[in-house]
Length: 238
Ligand code: ADE
Picture 1 (cartoon, protein in one colour):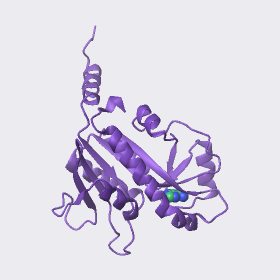
Picture 2 (cartoon, rainbow, N blue to C red):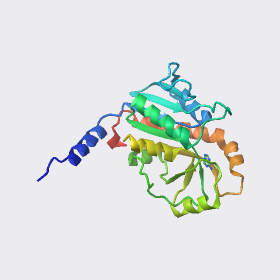
Picture 3 (cartoon, rainbow, N blue to C red):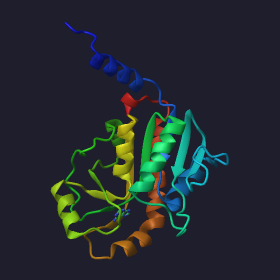
Picture 4 (tube, rainbow, N blue to C red):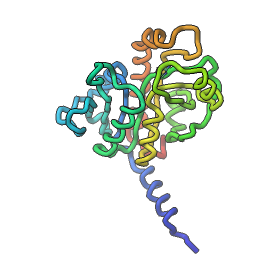
């Protein structure tokens, strides 16, 4: 007889959390070009008194949008090379520090991604993101399995593994954000807009740069619509 074991109490706490209105969202974005349209749309302001360790390039924008406290973090420019700090290392570090400092109810990792010619293999990720069937339906978004690696191009071995695991989009940060979110038990969702066809005819980097501006506008729209949908809801309604 164990009606109230530790496991069930834990499950009840999670259930209660899922039924509270979401009040704080953390948006994690790797590139300044991807971040700024969203910062402007949601009228977020840069934090001049950083919650992050002194000297790191990480940038936080924040504000209140409708009923939500929104924080958007961007890992900033690499201090030596002056380029955006893309990739898994900076994404995991900034996500960890932001969760610790800001205690969000929900994380959105938004960004661009590469896709594949065959885009009909939808699957469940090996690290399951927070399930949002209502949000997907309302915004008419496609659900897919995301593969993350620290480069824009892929080796033939990586491509074989992506195909074997039914991944349909490829980015450079998602798995890192998912790892940290899972570690600290914060639900996370991933919104990716496609800039390039990885196994298409055009060189990936060229296609990525060609499409970046237009795709960033689509990303901005999808993220804003998602935030509007999330406003006033609890996790279990997503
Ligand atoms: N972001 C946009 N396109 C990408 C690609 N092909 N690989 C990784 N990240 C990307």
